[in-house]
Amino acid sequence: MVLKDWIRVSLSDHKNTIDEGMCGISGCITEGRAVAGILYRSLKRLEYRGYDSAGMATISNGKLYVKKDQGKIDEVNERLNFNEMPGSIGIAHTRWATHGAPSKVNAHPHVDCSGMLAVVHNGVIENFMELKRELLDLNHRFVSKTDTEVVAHLLEENLKRGGDFLSAFINAIKRLDGSYALAAVYVKEPDKILVARQDMPILIGVGDGSMFVASDAAAFIEETNRAVVLQNGEVAVITAKSYDIYRVKDGTKVARSPIVLDWTVEMAEKQGFPHYTLKEIFEQPLTLKSALRLQDAYVDLLTEFLDRGERIFLLAAGTSYHACLAASYMFSKLARLTTFPVVASEFVDNYGHSIDIDTVILAVSQSGETADVLSALEFARLRAATILGITNVVGSTLTRVSRAYLLQNAGPEIGVAATKTFTSQLIVLAQLALRLAKKRGKVAQYEMDEFRDRLYEIPDIVSRVLDEVKVPVQGLAKKYAGEKFFMFLGRGISTATAFEGRLKVMELSYIPCIAYAAGESKHGPISLVEEGTPAFFVCPNDSTRKAILGNIEEMKARGARIITVGSKDDEELMEISDDYIGMPDVHELLSPIVYVLPFQLLAYYLAVEKGLDPDKPRNLAKSVTVL
Ligand code: F6R
Image (tube, rainbow, N blue to C red; front, side, top):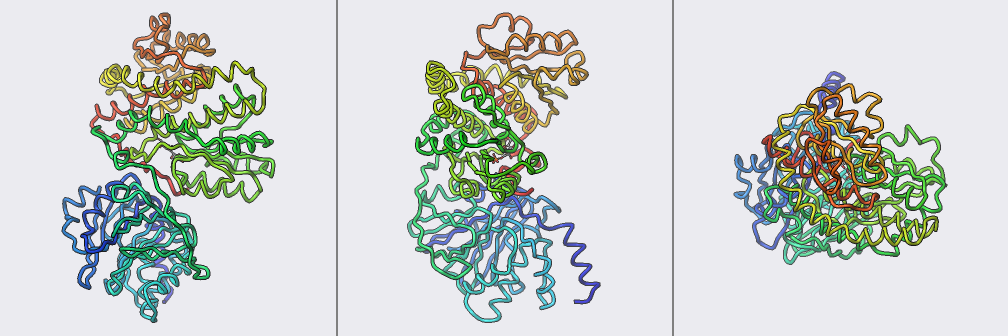
């Protein structure tokens, strides 16, 4: 290629590519059953992974059919009618662009020049420029700006040189640098879907006379609950009746039996609620109960590692970071253990130089795939730190990089905003704190017993609170939906609740919010208060109550409207508040699990009031798999 062409490719492509970081892929092959409807439903389940464009490819009678476009899955379906696509084999994709505009040409599946094969991809192919140049020199015609399209042309090129689809696929995979979950189909071998995995999740669903592949089991749970997790460096050949896994490196066959997922179809559906987010908020009594059923041996193992560490970091992003913040109070107050909660993206800069073999990192990640978390862990792992995990996703990358991990058992969370997974993280962390307290023997037995008793009451308390506060919080949402700004303040462990309240309200209602440890509010935020500024206070009847009363008075004196979430019986607080949500008394260290509920509901109802989609807040994706 002449230099001019090279510049054209590199400049135009750099602006628009490497954008496949957060997508959902799916595939299905059956013994004669049409797959289009199945794939469409699977895409709907994967929509939380991305929803700016969608597409599908099927094969029927020696012909490849491809439909794709920009827009949410239903919008695309309305225009294109996926259900009409013929064939009992197909692959599909839902995309969320991180760079570059979502568009029809950039939507997946991507096809080769001859239109004989199609590929869907989640991840980033780092050396795509080099491959693209090579393929352009071989006269391949590219139509999109994506890194994925090189895979289609690479496959085509390999097939041209002889060999079957699998060998062409393996040879193509060997050329790729970066991360990928890939699925491909080829008209000349219409009896198989080929898949590959490197650093992006992909599961095989094993049904009866039909097989599935997907980024996430939610995509096929309706059809089967038996799943095989593909590991890094593996490819699989999936036919309607079988799956065979091979290692890319040496071609050896890998034997792996399916695991049975105890996620019911109902768990992945809305169960009559208007939105997943509301369903998931009301599911919390159940998810908390199931998170109380941890396997003792693993709790002991994590406790052992945490107790041995010299420096302990609690590492996470977003909502999971707020769970870590709350946990740092639990570990300190109950187990007398100092831990450092840290935002994953800051970890290396802040603490990278002091990581060594005595460092223990407890990473908390609902998805187990958050890139900031995984990259911080990789850094720490190379310095011999011990990695522990808490996650909601079996087979996620976090489960593979951790020495030991605990599962939240919250079931799939479809709403983009974390709700039930936050409280399940908290209750898992509380159990760890309790076990650590026992091991370290630094608090009185009666205190531990009391904590344990209060812990097991939590699911019932949560159930009652949800019923009691739903209507009053709906009222608050109506009253405050027109506001331009909110403040959230708490003290002690309630600082974490205030932070999480702010995040929920901000991301679902798009109303700008700040949150502070209330003691800090006089060091700056108070300057924002003017007549009528709504200030939310988290004020359980605990050791922080007296101090926070002072902070409330400070704000009130400057004209703030005080909205308090506090104890049902606290008349003094009620008196000074403009609006009040009464809560039952709970153990101080468990209060975030209960006190966050009104804020989750507030965020949800504010979004509804404002006509927004609470399940899919703009610009956000459920699983943030790019740095
Ligand atoms: C907020 C939210 C995000 C996630 C964050 C970390 O509602 O969902 O802030 O908490 O992206 O995700 P995980 O826990 O999967 O690592």
